[in-house]
Image (cartoon, rainbow, N blue to C red; front, side, top):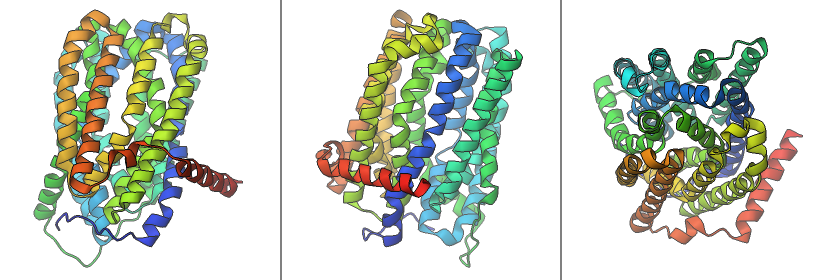
Length: 443
């Protein structure tokens, strides 16, 4: 099985459902921010700045190592399944085995390095090691998510998000209500809620077709394609997660407490982009369409810009109210991170297009360069400026990665930057029409 560039002739079935899939996935992506918005103030009020920082310090290595250990395999499963649906069972099984091995190695590394990640705090060190046990099951769920996305089974993907968000919210509220919400139980909730969401894939049906291929050969192809993605994923993880891991030794848990709150709010601006990126990867792998890619980028940029603008304009009164005035220093950090999130949206969609069109190495190069700049700036700015310095580093890295992706897709596939960035009246009409159809369908 090879990984050829997909046909440029649009598939009617795929193209016709893309807008609806993106809208439904975007709506489901609201669930995670809603859960975060509902639980973050509870955690902040109950645990305080230092306690919230300790939870962030204990779970940051879990999030970092989980992302590193994917080796690009979930996205590889999506691409391979979208191109060869008849091999979905074989692809998913091979990827799951590879992820199990990767997860076991990553868990051992995380446990071994727990004293370093914790900054020497004994309680945080133990929680870091315990949370690391969730790495392998989380990776296995990623393989199932990739298979569902490759089959355009977005209902299952959305159900996973619903269950995970509900589990996180319900557990936090319940434990807070009975007085058992502390740093340890909060860490447990963060680690286990994504695993609980995996129950949605019980309904996943993979196909075992007549095509035969050796397990070693298929595993090699998955790893080969996935490794090209993984270089980018590695850089992307360093760009988005390493700052939280290093904040404790560089600036202390208090600054991390501010930063974690800011990140949880800023990431909500990406709810539309995450949906568009995921659906674009699957749809463009099935059939490339330059016009669809440009429209997806502009609409996602528009939604993220509106939502991000609303967050920044209003957070000055609701953030201190919800989280407590002790978290007021997180305000400028949040504003910078929202700007970084919104500015990177067109580049994120362009990156999905590069992967789907058989050039994952270009996206990886963009993220690698951005991650290098981010790391160098982090060591220079975080000790002096704390959370604000880390946010500035993220903004610089996000801008570099996004614009390099946009340049590469322009240079190699002829899609002009304006087609990804410049929102027009037609995009507003399309967005309104899709949302109206979704609302009518739900009613």
